[in-house]
Length: 468
Image (cartoon, rainbow, N blue to C red):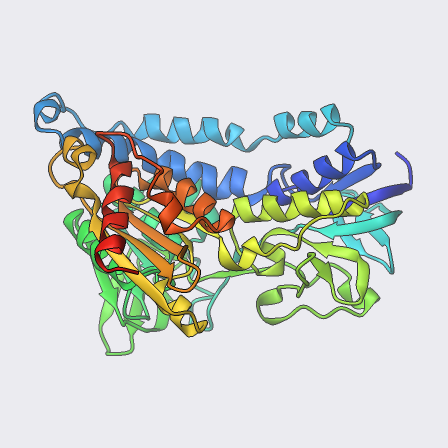
């Protein structure tokens, strides 16, 4: 392989692959460096396997909500089949297909650990210890993703706990699972493991609500749903000590109030960190910030390093696969000299979906976030179960839909939906926010009947009633 490329990408997850592909489409020579599996965290230990574990039980719950169909459900979930399906979605943790795709788009794959070795220089250390130096004439893109963070709790580091990789690759379900953290990974995997057959699942969250960055009603409705599944929720519960009995015995979590919770496994899901400690950043005078994340400007460049870009989780802006891919598309074009708009959507229009049952889907600002930003806003809400489409989904279908509207511009700046399948409602809200469509214009966007999307009409009716 050549020793000089226009662009070198460190990290072959979704963001890195997109940066490489878009740069290549613009006529640049591109190499991508990967020390693990081409496809990254999302493909093998994140988005895909987690949703493969969640979807079968979600489908079963949807059928059970429809009275006429519920009687047809006479058996239990086939756990072995679920795990085989999960294996299929991860290609059994083999990356041949992904590597072949890189070859098909003429991007060179450099297997090994990549690190900076000076301005526009990258060293790749192969599995056999061989070190090869490459030059990037246009720029280097860091796309190394993120890993599970480990909080400084006494005994935790020595207790042989699970992280997202362990739980999404599970072969044998524990009877009792403790989950430390009530964020996205925590709530999704708590429900997946419980519905797949664990006898006891407990979520331990130090804050007073789940998914604390979302609207307060999200936590209330999700807590009710998870408790209905038999999951215990400990809010405002701070873990102070963790002890495991032997190497594979029960694990005990001691809370600040003195209570002890015991499980067979402990999933630690309290946040993420960027694996940037061995990227050679010191060779170019760059120091990562808290959590290992690297600061970038709105063009995704490291300040004062016009040749160095960071996309995806590693820049800490929005730890979501689709946002990383969006950033990568911008960077791939920018490296080829194409004029691109700054990545403002990373601030004001970030879509996010939590694939619990009910789903939680949100984009843009929360009501509190909008007010904190100095906006004069109106928030309106409606129950998705009170639409004709929601009623047809069966008993127990419901959840809050809310729009946050800027009074001055008369545009939507935030939207949140809770309910079955509401992730599919989200893109309409994202388009409305990005396009800055006024609520007056949206009044003429007619939702089809009878669908859950009719909730848009009900929300706009409330806006009209309040004479925004």
